[in-house]
Length: 246
Image 1 (cartoon, rainbow, N blue to C red):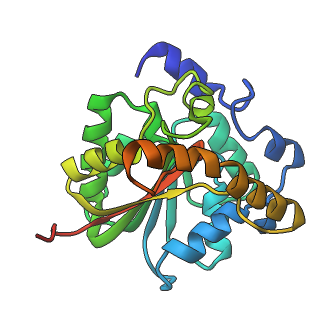
Image 2: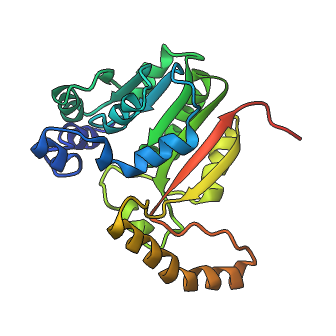
């Protein structure tokens, strides 16, 4: 790892890049994570005994939400000591300060689900494919990978791409599928990050999103002939480890 990047990761909270509000409150609450709640309900298996890894887990908010939903076999790693210390201060179990690659070397066919939330954009292209190969090897047959990345097609996607000095990449639905297919993943599905409805304010945001993006969707349809466009700053990607069908 480059020295400049390690310097930023080591100070990820104190530089204001992550978890500032959580650190001030020194607590977590499930209702503060409507996105994770929706994600868990819609994309995870119902079995609670599955093995889950959260790579680049940050201060452990996703681990916390998973545990609140009854998933106890969850491991998380992050290279930022500040983030892991905060996770431990919050009482989150299973979070370890460790390099992802080192962790995966010991985890062959160990997991049913691997989360890669806001991490792939930190990797250079050569690192990206090598890392996805490791993730693939860590998954059991028919396991799933759940990814959250900046969306290069998003109306304001460059806010995320350049919102962190350690970011190296940005993706479209086509480029992330290309990378995943090259590493053996199939059944790749990409989802727009629409505002999650969990109250009156979020309902208004969702209505505004649908209305105000309509003209951009129409313009893209006119140019491309396609109707499915992902316009949010980030996108969610779900893929499966399985034999490709023909």
